[in-house]
Length: 167
Image (cartoon, rainbow, N blue to C red; front, side, top):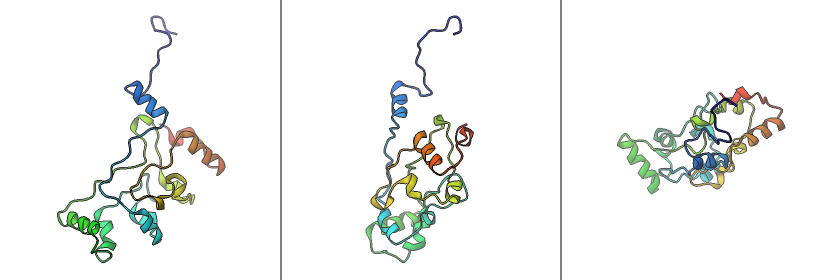
């Protein structure tokens, strides 16, 4: 211990004890989505996750669908449904849907995650995101703790180098 330093001081990388506790318990506020999105219907029609979540195989982050993506199909499909009409009206005004990310790490977590190697390794989306077919509003159903990731990597004999995920 350095001279003049107090003993037994609790410090965290979070601004408050409550924030540190939430982090320790992996509690995150639920994302508020602009509309209900029936993943079950789209998955039931065998639309692949990466059709709407573009870029997931090429980069770190899975894209969130733009209205342009929705309207690729919905310019012709289910155009009589109020939700589709609402989305088309937003598009006509030049607006987009303000989706909120359900999964991700804050900068304070010092964690980076790259979807691309997981896609190349053919890890099923449900492994990390749960059964999206059961959700009409995307919510966190799998907690991405270090233990969760390390267990999966060990089971699949994937690298567990700390610097691959932590900076």
